[in-house]
Length: 268
Image 1 (cartoon, one colour):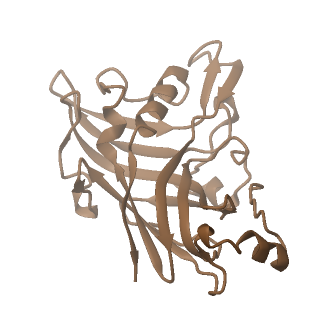
Image 2: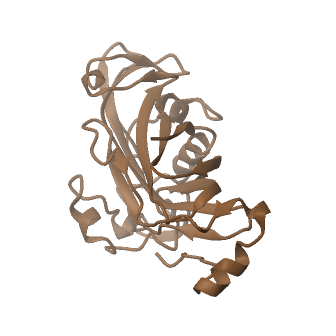
């Protein structure tokens, strides 16, 4: 992670950059950390541990499904002050939604109190999405890494479960998002990787007042991955999605179109 951009480096420059009251940053207070909580819902109905493999959800296409796994990676939580100063935590967090693993996360950065535009990246962007670069991710969830023949780097999300197929039987699905990759042929003869395309995306949470003991709650609406702008038909696309460039682009479009939103920002 090489994107920390602290425009005011020394103490004297920091004072000069923040001496204007319009910047709305309290440089006299001690720097503070910011706590995040990541939650999941289906069109506003909270998804809890007990819902996995038991609760039936209906997609925009009218398909009934049950979730068994939902793991996803966020990175580069960034705070941008009104004067343009950027504080980039430059770390990452792999959330295991079913068990609540890493749902509570505090980025490794402290910032002055004030108003900031807050954002984060879903997955890794290409600068950070390097092969075998993160030892903990190499073994996470079996392995969170992506084979080099599929473009390398790491998964962004693994969503899995079962659905009621059109024929009436129950089938499994694996909705896995990675960096999009284009091959000259698809499995089983996939041999030539022509190019890759960054399909991570930035989630903008808007302007948030940061003070002492601020907690920001972020929600993922899982239903959005199946409906907007691409209505997803699991009867057509339910597995072997990772090698298919067009599907990764479509998943990026659905996720970046409102899957994440700010639920609340409170001062404890």
